[in-house]
Image 1: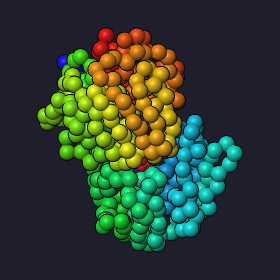
Image 2: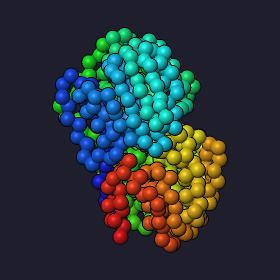
Image 3: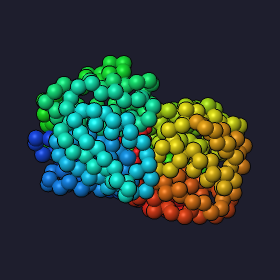
Image 4: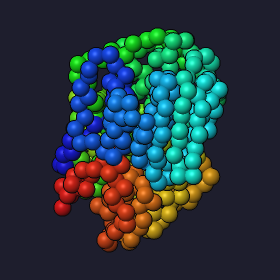
Length: 388
Ligand SMILES: O=C(O)C1=C[C@@H](OP(=O)(O)O)[C@@H](O)[C@H](O)C1
Ligand SMILES: C=C(OP(=O)(O)O)C(=O)O
């Protein structure tokens, strides 16, 4: 049995740091082992507190999409520096809403975004099928305004569980938001007041990689430090691996995945996009075909993740067909993947998928650009040594 103590949740950490910074009373956010993305948010809130205007988001979509409206709500000026693919990832719907509510938002040739002006409340409209991070950004910002606001979601809200995480953290900081089917009602003039200590719960998205290692490998893997009643949508990895035939069980704060004979199925990932690389690897080791559907938004992440997953798994000897909004994974019928040299696509979740694939490959696997893993999981390769 291999035991892994999981890292703190990146999604919870971003929100807790921002809420703590907005809080009237000091809150210590307990989050050991900060990844590049969490550090980006930590540095941005430090800059915000000390009145600096330049904020480096690195490659973190969450940091940019959460901090931009928050800075607007405080009526401050901000210049947001971006790296890698972040400047190309969608921002339009959020920028339009900020611009129509009092802020001037600009973008320069270096991929930097600037904001100035005082955000004002009112009615905001956002599409539900681009990024839930736009909604989170507004929900973190709007309670700070004098006026009341209403955020109306057009169409089906994808990645909805991430908005639940936002509401959960806001609640811990004393902020109430009423939600009905497609609308969030945000009272203005609310005060953030957090606990003295806020401990960030374990990261289900990161845990998924280890659980897949348990399912497809030869040793069971137990991941410790998870909240079994979490709001994180990615805890659905337990259900997804179960639907592929994996023997998997949870006790208190640990989940154990046992080596299993997997069989293909259909998996809708519209609510759990970050699990897709790990799920695709598991499906590659299954018997029969798996169809991953509603995955179009994976093209908008650190890489075009549909292309990155299919190119990478195919190079390693699996059989994956890329569709416009999905993946067909043929399954290996129990045969190991071959191995080979692949590229990281600069994407932490692709690095982790490849590293777990290397545990079950016939030949050596090499990956160029493995340092991309630091975006979310700096200690990942240290943990991987447990398989030696
Ligand atoms: O709010 C969050 O913490 C996140 C939301 C998701 O993005 P989308 O809402 O764009 O799918 C997810 O992919 C990302 O890694 C983290
Ligand atoms: C897409 C991700 O993060 P972000 O959107 O915050 O860059 C991720 O962690 O997979």
